[in-house]
Length: 208
Image (cartoon, rainbow, N blue to C red; front, side, top):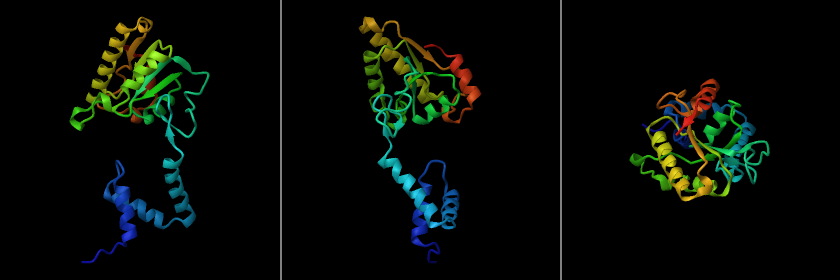
């Protein structure tokens, strides 16, 4: 039996299906939804997708996403530059900023340590974090990796590396290492947590 779906339609379905959380049925619905939209609407969607690669880049300081030379948080003079919250992805920053409870800076690791997936400490931005500690006047590091096995292992590794750095540099001995509290469910992701849960986790952070 010949495929009744035109190649161009099937190609878009296949591309949508590659996205996280999108199965074949959802991919098909999205594709056929676009078929009923105007050519201008589809063009705007395509343009927005292209702009992700053409205009969006990493902030050279915190490694979050930005379309500026320095992201809006790193360039905000009102932020408390003595605190750095360590997160796995830029999505975590978006979730935490919704709480309006935190006024410091961030550091995006770009993932978590996961031996099963072949991701080691050298594959995430731990070295860049340690370099920031040497250069900036930091009084507290808040470990806000996800409360799952990978996130906990990553937090523990960073805490060990910072502790080692503190023994090597007299100026860094006053840095406090804290971990966000257990207001978050084990195995959950920051990006899916509500503002109240995140606020309580921030308020209840403990020294690590």
